[in-house]
Image (cartoon, rainbow, N blue to C red; front, side, top):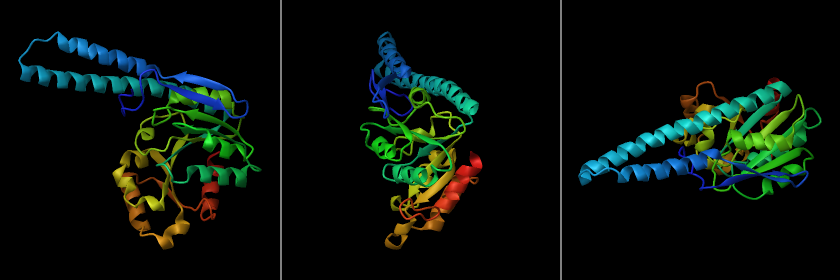
Length: 279
């Protein structure tokens, strides 16, 4: 179990699926074993204390809180070290790695399909898809003709740097290309885990409500770009665009906001120019 967010299960494994070859590779998260070890140590330690009920209870809570914080620091520190390796790998190949993050249903996969189909004659793409289960999104991306690897996280609610490293071994991206990483749909934990990407691009659908940036500030603070998707539906919704932008900029004044429709094409030229400028 991940101490940072509580996701996962003991001995859980992420599965990397190469959509071109069908090869399956399991990536084991070492921190799951570590958490199990710490958890059992916690209980054995508690049993060695013979205090009054109230003091024992208070001591147990304080001790567990300290262990949780320490373990979270260990997990994130290990992830950051692996993320730096990934970042060095991308820099060596001059690869622009984009971490697409959002809640489920924001339109990330549709945006990826449209972006790749519109730009694949101008630049080279490859994709890593992150989901708890299925290869549905990877199958959709595969129809665009680019290389794609699926990472199934099982009970995990986010990709981490170790999973990405396993995916990159299968993906083998070309030099001077773009790697699009579609993270697991979740506005919480993906904000905390650096994958070694160039930046995070948050996708927010106007169907989700304008207050998401202040409800989930860490995600929007971690992002460099916010794509406000499905703007073609605005006539049918009660969505305050200006309030949404105000909320987003209140948590991240440097955020670049682009209004788009992945299905109708609104604003995509601005998004495409941003990609070109950053490659």
